[in-house]
Length: 81
Image 1 (cartoon, rainbow, N blue to C red):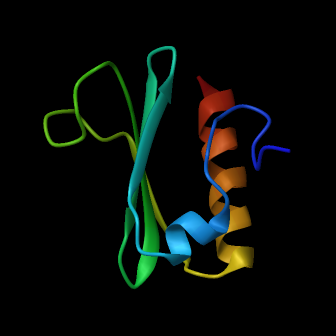
Image 2: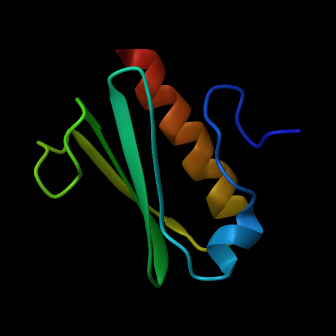
């Protein structure tokens, strides 16, 4: 079972282990930056996050609950388009 009905996102353990993650669906792109918290960025287009105009940005606690909130937030940003 995937953690998201829209995106192929690894389970929380992947992030708990200190990894970053990026992906896209159509022209909607996203990146999760792993630090003290989980920072999620979204933008439209095929450019990498360093060159893209970031449209949305939010930080979440690095806990299972924070991870679930991040996935929900990401799905909401995708649905707004």
